[in-house]
Amino acid sequence: MKIAVFGANGQLGRELQAISASFSPHQLYFTDIDDIDITNEHRLKAYLFDNQIDIIINTAAYTAVDKAEEELIRAWQINALAVERMAFFAKEKDIFLIHISTDYVFEGQSYRPYNEEDRTAPISVYGRSKRAAEEAILCHKPRSVIIRTAWLYSSYGYNFVKTILRLAKQNSQIEIVCDQIGTPTYAADLAHIISLFVNKIDMFKEPQIFHFSNEGVASWYDFAYEIVQQSHLQCVVKPIPTTSYPTLATRPFYSVLDKQKVKTTLNISIPHWRESLEKCLRGIDF
Image (cartoon, rainbow, N blue to C red; front, side, top):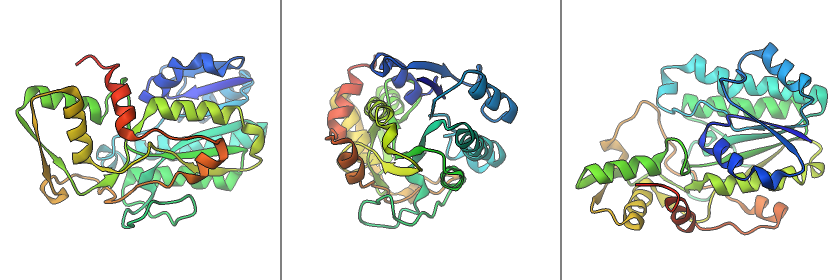
């Protein structure tokens, strides 16, 4: 089968490239904005149809959460409208769609892990645009899997782990929010999950939503503290409340994802976030 991976230069796209051999004998087409602008309806359609694509893996997204509050149109074009067109074309040509979504579709006022059936209520432009993409897929009903994930990081690209490493090297003390709770997700682990779904696409006749992150729970402070500890950097990590670090976009205070459905469907166990962080740090030169 021919698989188009959109957003190939992002951290998840790079992790998919790193394990491309595991997709054999399928043929992967790794593309990014320089190759195909997914917001251009005609070029998107031509790319999918001319290359006779069988599976779309959409990792492309506008992920600058605060900037999205000011660049609403651009965020909506990439996160929602482009995905709606993918869903429409996928239904038309029976292309299987794997789309990556986010924990930010939830309001974050719960105190138990969110499952796939829980009510969504995004509180930011980013979250609303990602939820609109989910709704478009559910409306057009291509054969598809929506994977919600959270706090994604990797040894590639720009992410929280690399930011903390940089700040901890430059400062004797850093302050990190301690009252936003979720679960870090190593993009390499998510890439592996995507490869497993590719091998099981015959199971899915209409859209299904799954949650995936690493195991465990953390605040951003916990995550930063562990990054510094595992990296043996001489920096004090100080917890602060969200009110001491105002941002343009409001974040969910609690967005832990319930992963029982994906564990049962794929018959897998999921590593703890501290274990996966250790693997990631081994691949970063700091």
